[in-house]
Image (cartoon, rainbow, N blue to C red):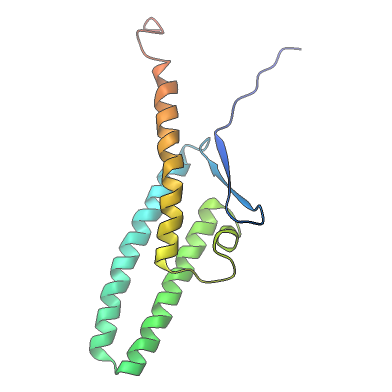
Length: 140
């Protein structure tokens, strides 16, 4: 019997010493866009959080300001965790960071280590699309 199988562009990446993995599903054309949209959203929220912290420090006493700012940043980082888990799969943050609420510097490190996979995907995609140029397909 004749058949075909489509080659999926899924990258499986080990993220800790216990062998846990996450997957980057490049077969889903929306995945890269959702990743970069998430990064933009996090950047905007981080800027807003910094402005909010400045306002808290201006209007609260020292002890209250520190406590309020800490609670605000914890909520921000927990929101980022939910976004990361929604994009990469349940428990991604636990696999990558352990049982903590990671700070933005850890998220930045994580995202920076993922970027080469997106760059490689873009190169591979451009090469594959080049196969279908008008010259090669005789304008079909």
